[in-house]
Length: 459
Image 1 (cartoon, helix red, strand yellow):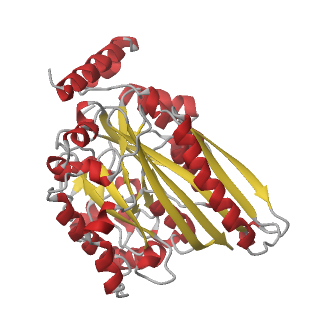
Image 2 (image 1 turned 180 degrees about the horizontal axis):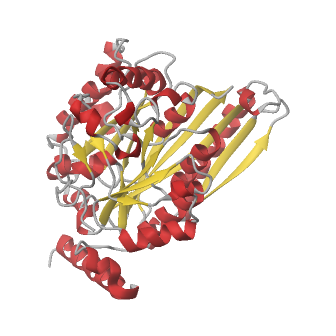
């Protein structure tokens, strides 16, 4: 039996064993998709230390404990070097929190397949909450051997993927900051074969992402530009080992964790921390008129690998908004989003799910509903929300949460942990649709994505 077939068989047997042990067979009854539990080699514990310097600036350094001490040591060496270099350069901070001066050196991780894992080490320097600098590097490892995985291990030398990568880098980077021309020479230098082979990248549940600092092409812009290629598009171009490690639909069920109504200062920040600690990516639906005042948080959502959509311009009932105001929303939301992260929103979620007036007025957005409501907006406890998720979750679900609520940061962490431990891969909405080849269309509503079915889930 070929190694690939054996790996899939072992994953399926593991998933069946897991399902057999579940009380009442609840998950097994809802879906026949595989659910491989979180592998020991994929488990990570993140902790941080804060150091307050003499000028009251703060250096926060995160550390990772993985299955491999060699990986921990390499990541720690990177963060320590950056802390030593950046810390002394931080300007003096005032006493007030909003007048901060700090550097946050974070480690974000993601998994794919049964043994591979990516880490994005990111140093974000902020002054008065404005992002003043950003440094980033990536590492991908086989977490059973500690061997580093390079793009040349993912794509053969003669793969068509190299040309596709170059074209996608050009197209994606040029789409950022549309009112500004990128440095043409710098852009072309990013697209050379040599540059692509050495590009910073990470692997996720359903996508490969190249990470490119915006300042490479746009002076004094510090956004992390993301160049995304979804696995269904590129897996045929991969090496055999890379195909095995990106064949997540053979190992896991999938779902998308989404958050509405933000951003808000404290709880959105804590939700982002919970997602980082659990190695999860999510989708945030932000209210348009809140983006300007919380632009730093919207930028963090984007730069930390989450998808960002809109939640209309205000949280008003769309059935009570004039047609003219409805049709004016996309420009206002797009202008605010461009100012915050450099790209427009890709889709919208209408407050209360009242999308008919938006469709009727041909606003042109794609509308993302949900198939599992946690009702966290009612102030439910983490235990109650988790019970709801355990009872109702099914493959392809879109889960509704709200990052403005006080209990949601802890709840998000508990839900993400349970889902991953029980065989779910958390995807962004974009990834969830892409896994089945679903292309979002304007004035169209999507509730979930299970085998290409995006309709409302029957209860």
